[in-house]
Image (cartoon, rainbow, N blue to C red):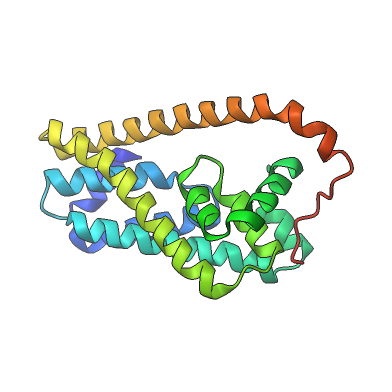
Length: 213
């Protein structure tokens, strides 16, 4: 993936549309690894002249933000089939836990959900089910997308600061983001496994539906 992107980004007219489209698509349908995409773009921006780092951050933020807003709209206004499609692969007890946290913390959960591994979809499902107001969702999700873009871009910048070759920096940035993501996922899954036995007695009989309220 990295070599293909690096080749595409040598043409500045293609670089930003590829980045925006990839992040937007990956934020709606998780078929594109959006974090590595942003990290690779940032690495390319600091080692070549075809992309600008600030523009990479802006484009990545907008793509992530619009993707999250679209997913929220599906969760809030879509029918049961649409909500089930968004919730595929998610555990009902995890979604219910996030809904309870959402009632207490609101916009802070929107930000945390974007930054934490496997947190974005449960949070957007909870926001849609609870009919979270647009006036609060939009700025919170924009802040979350901005912090997310900066976090992954920093990994790319670190790679670009070490390697002069745009291709090598892009490859290393992609690998670095994947490793960091895998470690965070492992830590998060272990934490959930440790807390699961404590929640099970309370969760028995709890609703599993996450459709719009």
